[in-house]
Length: 300
Image 1 (cartoon, helix red, strand yellow):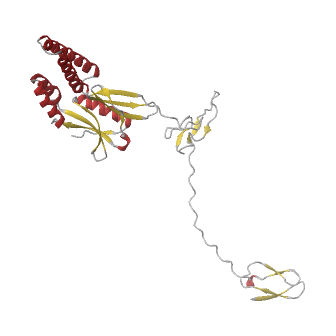
Image 2: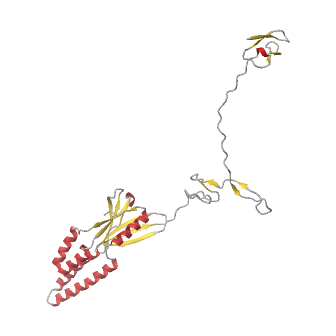
Image 3: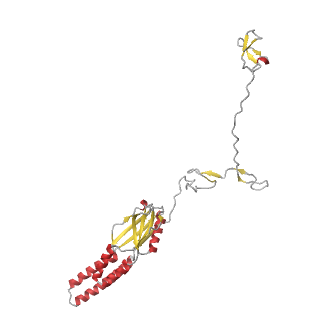
């Protein structure tokens, strides 16, 4: 440390070794005393500080490209041709009135509701209802003719009436027992699958299938008749050879195709419909796929 005499009051002024300025203030009188260069300390060199490279400015395109001619478009207007959606914050065209990503309408601030094509299809197993009624009516006429012949030949009227009732009831059960499937979808996208069973033309309680618990729809081919078909066939053979043969030809002989609602592994959750027409089965699967979004995968 150095000491100087104050030129104003004569007091000693201490000069620290780190003092680098040409003057120092006297603590007694406040006068600024000159500091010789030999008593000054050396200033520390500034340390270089790493700085980030300057960020490259984004080139702003022109919304309107002007010209230098005397026309209706003399100026160029720079700007961003995109804007951010208020719903999903994705960049879209600046002139867009709704977001193509989330469907938000910028005028109302609400999402646009998607409209679906309405679907309402119904299928009946094997024969349609009108044909079944015609066949039953024809068989009832045959029953009436046979009962009349039996009464004319000496049979009792009560016996003929009982014959008509028994045969008619059995024929109505065989012809009028079938399944009906209905697939619907509203314009808002709500889909329902309804299964209806008719026994002797009398409808039972409709069953709405829980298709949302499934992942897909497929076709299962069944080549062997069940125990019910065999019992009915044997019974009809005892009633007459022709009814048994007709039942075998129209019911037992054709292959059967089951419309199955499946889980993600292809296992069956519900049997929605049974038919002997492969084309009808594929049409039903495609319609269910379109109405519900379930994948269509044949299960053989």
